[in-house]
Image 1 (spheres, rainbow, N blue to C red):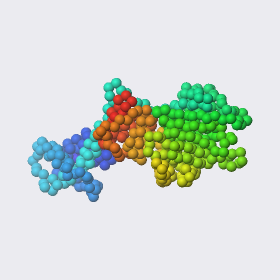
Image 2: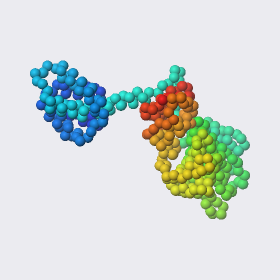
Image 3: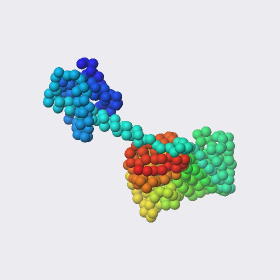
Image 4: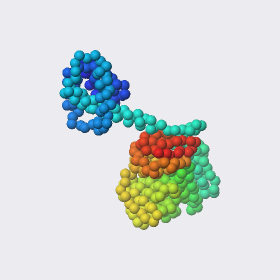
Length: 397
């Protein structure tokens, strides 16, 4: 009996940690069907003392099935004794305490495992994540595909600036010599769907571009009253403090279709995609002014809708997840999350008539994963299913 009790105690301990397998559940039923009433009463009393007074959800609907399993096992064994009513009551308690949560956990795990299966149509393959790629459009109209440049070797010279790609993939602007030129040109860096890029601007400001985004900027800020950048899509800025010719801080301005963000030196994120209902500026460090309406503190976000602007306190990490190479599924609504996925994996999202408009999401996942891994995590909510066909993702209930 000592060996059996040790085994049962071991299984029970694993159950408390949610580590009880289907095989161990079966073993537990078998062993409970072979021990005497006295031994069972002693064992159950110890377990009940450890477990009480914690209620077990769902015990009523699962009790009959558990008792039937135990009764069948007991009746299949020759026995010269009858089970007392007291022991029978304790036996029921043991079944509920030991087995119901384990069975519920096991069934939930199996359901989640099945729910995670993504249907991939015949002839289709899983889609890899985006990567560092962008196009640089020079002032003269020439377009350069940055992923074709050789790091540290190919250099582009224009308007007193040298442009090159570093070993980490970053595009860097450097001043040529000591002289400043009054002539400037405007460059544009654009990322496609499934692309991203980082650039060091002529003033040493760092910019991270998300997928399907672009910035337009001058080749030199030396003689400008302000450093003006035009943004479409989404970008994260780490602005360098710069003094103008008069010794004053030179403002850095990011202009979008619905916001004008003015800063001196700070870290912030601007989301200005055309297919989103609002433009959002999220401040992590420093101080920024949005339009002429609001001055943000770190941890705040300015949201521009049609003609209104709201300021909210937010968890900033939820809005720079892309810059940290992650998807934050907890704070984005379902359709917004699907648009993020569409941009990063360069896919088309099709909503079936049965597809829900909202799905409660949660968790984080790396953007380095294939699309199936991200869709599986969402699908495990049980409220939505996906089918991958070429570069098309169909959403159904």
